[in-house]
Image (cartoon, rainbow, N blue to C red; front, side, top):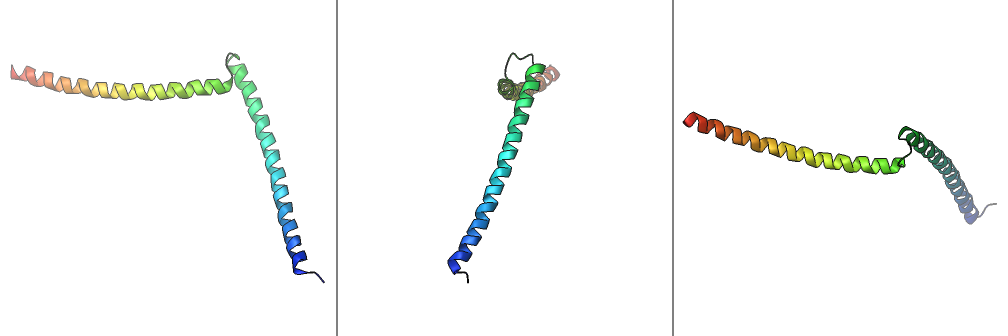
Length: 96
């Protein structure tokens, strides 16, 4: 006859077994992700001539995109100012 504690140990052992199996699966997935990342780094390195590591290229791309957004906003504001000036100029020309 099993004691209540023995039943809890069986339950605990099953839970630990599931956790261990899940960890093994996650380790396999992590290994695969690392393998693929290394493979992509190699491919990107060959495509870019190997001057910079792909991670540095991504950082530079992100920085360039951020600068581009700032410049686009400045252009938009500049266009708006130019349009207001044109309206004023047209108004003044009509007043002549």
